[in-house]
Amino acid sequence: KIKGFIFDLDGVISNTSVLHSKAWKQIADKVGTPWNDKLAEDLKGVDRMDSLNLILDRGNLQGKYSEEDKLALAQEKNDNYLNLVDQMSPADILPGIKEFLDSLRDNGYLIALASASKNAPTVLEKLQLSEYFQKVVNPALLSKGKPDPEIYTKGAEILDLAPEQCIGIEDAEVGIAAINGAGETSIGIGSADILKDADIVFASTDELTLANIEKAL
Ligand code: BG6
Ligand code: MG
Image 1 (tube, rainbow, N blue to C red):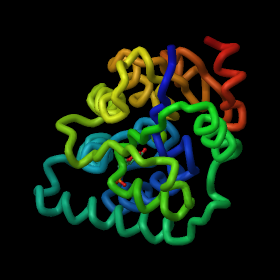
Image 2: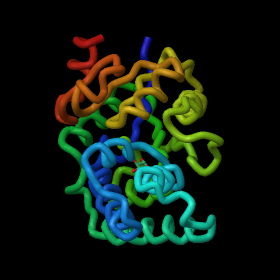
Image 3: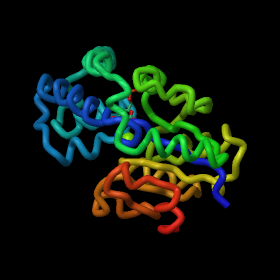
Image 4: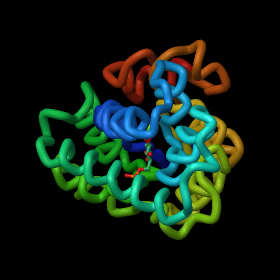
């Protein structure tokens, strides 16, 4: 029986996947890696340094940058990103998410956050959703990023639940792999082609209701 829901943040709770994308494109343009939809998709859910490495790999640029240069580029991306986050408000919560969180709370489900983003607490503050997320996995303490299951395994642990009692919600292919690898039920938000390994796929967050989930399970 399902007792808890573990959420990704960027692209599930808010449209910040678009802001991450914008900020990474500025770095890709700077180093000279061609930007395309495939790269944007592949970056979803991937942590900061792995994202930078992916951008450098795609441009065949790995040899060109020292570790120090890379830290500076990652810092520059984060500054770009935080400039965009600064403009955010509760209006940036994706459709139906607030209502879904309220229905989970009213029905006694436990809620946790499993975002790879070190900026997740700041974004939740901007959205005024921090009160729903008393349990947040700290990505700084993880040894491996998504698609490794670690972050979703930790999510169940901090809720004191077994993996089988948890549903994870993700917009990224690597995120679905992480949920599945942790032995939890996966819900994908977005394209069924890309999120083909998810147990359930909804095209948009406004389809995320307890009734729809029960129907689909
Ligand atoms: C994930 C995003 O949630 O967090 C990625 O989908 C992002 O795009 C990653 O790179 C790390 O975020 P941050 O804020 O720690 O750089
Ligand atoms: Mg995401």
